[in-house]
Every structure is written in structure tokens, then in C-alpha cells.
Length: 330
Image (cartoon, rainbow, N blue to C red; front, side, top):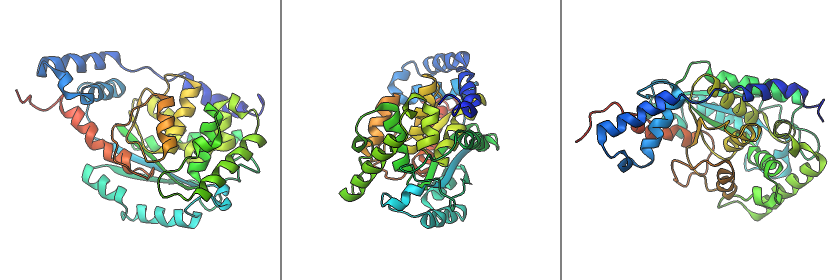
């Protein structure tokens, strides 16, 4: 397995070389809040969010001037096994609507002044069904992770991530199960409205996939390649690139949290530059957030992981930054 994972060596080294937060900017944020407001604890988590922004942007005061939401879109062969509500054709229709500015994400992004960038990763050529074969070779996974760096191409100062894909939730559940163990039925637990039959099929598929690919749990990046999908791998790449470029990251739903979990499994502090926008109604999402130690900024009962929550969170982070630039209210 060591030889098989060799193409992922460069990814592992990039994670190992991730820079630390800017302690001076964080200290400046803390001291400024005390000087301006005397009792910054009254602002609750907003105080910490401003400090977090400053530390990972490496500047004081923190500000959000070039926000970008990157949405990675792909397909999974496992979607043909009756585990998904949407087909690859349906994903392409959603992508078309996104690019035409006709989705809820577009409406919120317009309101918040956020640039939406959609990245299509061969939706019409889905990855193999993981119950039958590996989703990606290590080489293909490494290339897809590198492709995720493109999310930083427009030099954002804060990056939100979302994904779209038929079957992405089941693939993400398989990775989570490989990373943390437990019964597959625990990780495929659906949100409200999902028929029990679909949940059962998801659990069976993940069980079969983990049995077929024994040993991948020993290497989180190999688990990503074998069990995941292109949109999850690209999200891993965006998380890595953002850290190296001093860009805080806002995660969206279950699949982007799984991408973060892969990075954290390689390096425990590897996702300190990330926050989670919201907790979806998928129980496995909440379980995963507990594992990776991130508390959602919002709890709006959202079902989607397609960038809606992470785009919404820009407004909250802008409010946290405003505490450092607006005049104190006395």
C-alpha cells in the first residue's frame, strides 16, 4: 500500500508545511477589542471570529473585501445503486442554473457581494462505484487535489466551499467511516424525509466498499482516493491552498467537513484556518463536527451542502470584522 500511496506524497508534504496563524495580528485584534469596547466578551463568538479572521489573514484589522464561494461539482457511479435522490443529469441542470445565476446561492451571493466560482469535474464521467472499484487512483486523486487550488485563482481574502454531486453524501460517509470507525449505518444516517430503504442501501454500499478496500483506513489520503470523489478531493486541495495563501475558509455541509477531516487526520492543526458555517439536518454531519472539533456558526436547519450555508456565513464574518473598524457605540 505504501507504493500505491506514493503519488500522494507531495500532498502530505504540503499539509506538513502549512504555515501557522499570525500571532501578532491575533494579539492586535484582542487588544483592540478591549481598548475599544472594554467588555468584548459581550459580543460572544463574534469576538473570537474577528481574532480568527485577523490571525489567518495575517493583517489587522480583519476585513472581507474579496469573498469567493467555490463550488465543486462531480458525479459518482454509486449513484446508480439507488442511494441518491438526484442523477448526474440532475446535477448538470443544477450546475447550469448556478452558472445562470438562478439559484438561492446566487441570490445570497449577490446580496453579500460574493463571487461564485463553479468547478465542474467530469460530471458526465462519474467515478466508479466504490463497492466495486476504487473511486480514484492515488495519482488521479493527487491531480484532483491540485485542481482544487484553482479556487484561490482570483486571490480571495476569504473562501467558502461547497459541493454538488449525485452520491457525494454516501461517498463522504464511507470516508468518515474509514477515518473514525463504527457501523456504516451510523455515518449514512439521513436527514428528515429520506426513505428508510435509501438509508439501508447506503449502509450496505458503504459496508461492501469498506470490505473490498480493507486497509485504506490506515492512510486518510488513500481513504479519500479510494472511497471519495473528485469534489471532495478538490475541496481538500482548496483547504490546503488557502492555508498556504493566508485565506480563512468557511466549510458548508457534510462533504466539505469530511474533506476537512481528511486534512486534520494528516495534521491535527491542519484545519485551524477553517470554520463551519452551519449544521445541516443530517445527523452524521453533527457527529462529524464533534470529531473534528468545529462548532457551526449557524443552525438554520438547512439541508443543502451546495454552498448555501457557507455563502450566508460571509455576512456573519463581516459583522465580526466590523467590530474592529466601526466606531464604538459607547
